[in-house]
Length: 96
Image 1 (cartoon, rainbow, N blue to C red):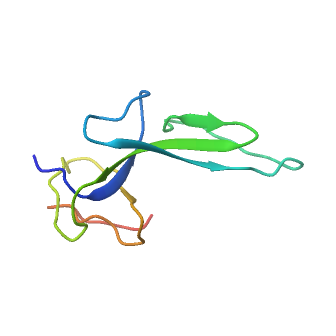
Image 2 (image 1 turned 180 degrees about the vertical axis):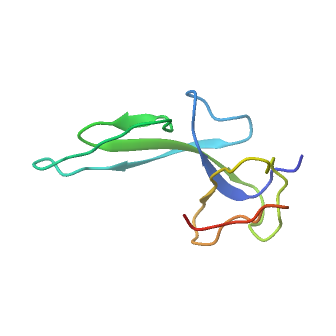
């Protein structure tokens, strides 16, 4: 399969797959009236008074060249350094 492109995926199980680089995003949540809630399956991260989420990125391709990924089930790709998303062959994208 051809995975080269510019995209990120949520990290799960502490390590990025071979060929992807680790990244993260942190935000300082409201301290006084913080009502954060979380449930279900979540990416690796910290979810308490502040939020820290980890992801894995691929940066060796062109977003306009479709990559081949398993598309039988829904999945999330995160845009990398752009509002434009990576094209995925045989997949239909939505902004949800």
